[in-house]
Length: 254
Image 1 (cartoon, rainbow, N blue to C red):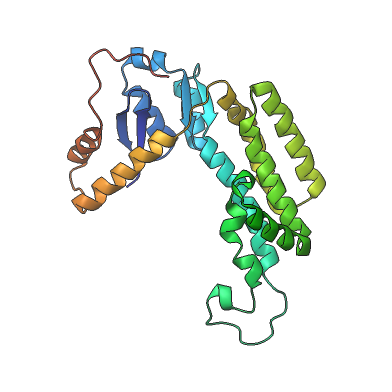
Image 2 (cartoon, helix red, strand yellow):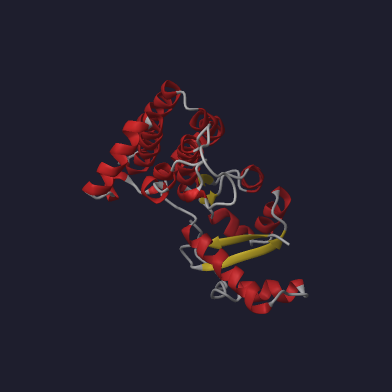
């Protein structure tokens, strides 16, 4: 059974928990909050989930919705990884095929396969030796190098000093994606275009789902320690008890 959890990072507590992970469950979770709490909500950070987006737009039409930075960057990074994987597969296979680990299977290019973690690392974190190794790989597979550059260019959008600069970087990135013509990244932009404004809302209020991810981990630990919970009401109270109880008159939620 999935649940929808509302949390307030600034107050370091869970606000509400309801069964389900869809539009109606999110609306129900917000409806359970006192009305003066709802009026105090200025920003809501969500994953790129259409049901949650529609729920927030319905229940809190005045709130600013921010697409979570981590999940947005992860989406673009995953698209670039797909390009690397595609170039790591060989069309023709010489020798034994099947029954071998991928890094030893002749169907896969070992240099490309072993570059996974290096490829995922941000450019400013690379050592000179690591950068040289990637450059050699990109010389053999220019499209992989282009995909790496595009994922790094997207990450740099979040380093913009303000929203105006971020919009310029975003538009430039979209232009380069279309010029590159890499299908994995074009497909990713096709999905991201519907979230553009929510991504840029981060620069109006730089909030993330980091606290919510920590709460999710605590809930998973609670489930494993309990080996399941038969009573949904008791389970709900256990989850709410993970963080301090809200005061009688909580401050506005940001």
